[in-house]
Image 1 (cartoon, rainbow, N blue to C red):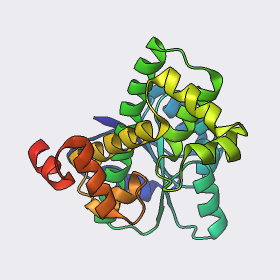
Image 2: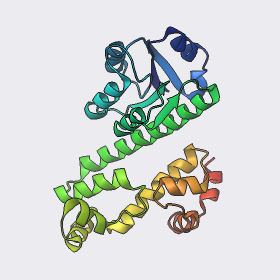
Image 3: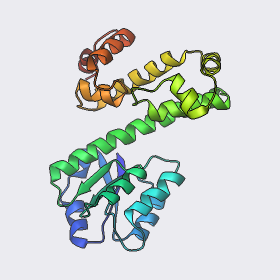
Image 4: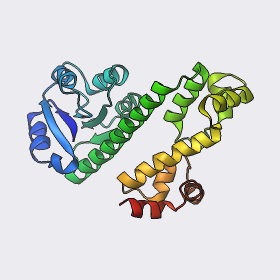
Length: 251
């Protein structure tokens, strides 16, 4: 189970969230309920949760400050969900800049909260799987600095339909595209385009097995934009069956 911390300076909100939601049915263990930012800070360091459901404005340390701090300093995966009554755009913008994808405005229905928790769990599980893959890869292969940077960029930006070696070369690394292509293929054993396709299809396989997202949604999540037909064609070519058949067989 993934570990969850709830933080809110209003006792009623804390009680409702902790007692009126069946966390176990969502695959979540509630390990701490905190009344302010500093208590939450200590609880995160103690329990090392994967999920933190927190109000934005709290005494001692705000939810934004917590997200900004731990997003830069923690080596384990930690996903923040903001539950707040503040609807101002600047709060939402700050949340996005801190890597927070779930911005929930009070009052919120139990169904909406459960849906957000499921999405956050999916994201955490995917990040954990990706981190394990990277550790295995990094532990057995040495990459030059430029190739390592390409791999890091691809891992974060594979959802961009416009991502290409040319774009990385000229807009990010300011290096010759042909040179980077040769280095990448020499060190990884794969052409950049093949590597990117393989990574995207692996991400798609995860979503097909662990989410209820439709093919169009998955296509967008893995970098095929609003072109689900092309995504399905590539998936079939790589895997040997359609995305729907793959999902049915795996379930």
